[in-house]
Every structure is written in structure tokens, then in C-alpha cells.
Image (tube, rainbow, N blue to C red; front, side, top):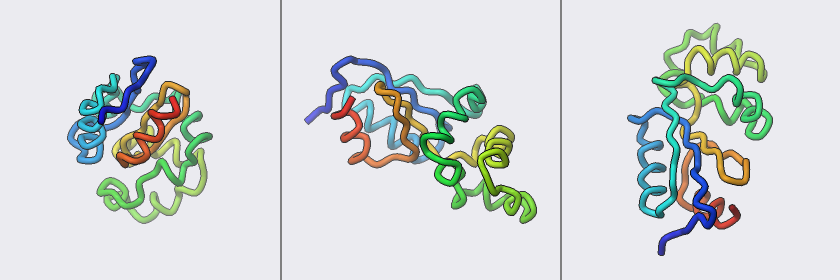
Length: 127
């Protein structure tokens, strides 16, 4: 059963095209006929004007992917220095790949970080 986005308002998906989780999210959205605007962190950068809102809604602890390769490649001093929203912002702007992906901005203005089909379906039902 296809989930419909009644307003046909595009969801904005932020991430990196070769990220497996981003690929899964994009495929799921396409399968469910949901229009998507994709923002590529590698080509377009991290939207510094949107980052404060993401931090407010999701928290820096959720946005910084501490399980990913980019985090593990940072030196210990850099990892230890990430202690609040300000330090996390600096890190995310300088190392976009450290952001957990995808970040989705939904038609109702809410955001989500990461992908599960269950979460995406529930969010579309509420939009």
C-alpha cells in the first residue's frame, strides 16, 4: 500500500548520496510516491542557517554520529572537545560526514534523523 503525502509537499532530505541509510530512505520515499528534494552535504555543504533549528529539535547528541567512520577517524582530543551544541556545530560544519544521516525536514516543519520505514510512514500519516 502506498503512503500518500496529501499535500504533495516535498520532503527535504539532507545527506550524502553514497550513504547506505540515505539510499534506503530515498528508495523508500520513491516507492511510496513521496516527492523529495535532496541536499547533498558533500556538494552543497551543511546549511549553517538550518543547523541551529536541527540542534534545538533533535539535540547535538543525536546529530553527531559517534558510531561512524568520520568520528572514529578524528583524533582523541577533537572527540573529547565535543561537549555541547557549540562545539558540535563547529565539528558538523567542518566535517559534514559526522552528521547522522539522513536528516529529513517534513512538510509540518518537524525533522527526523536517521531512517526507519516505520518512523517515515508514521510521519507521513501525520503530515
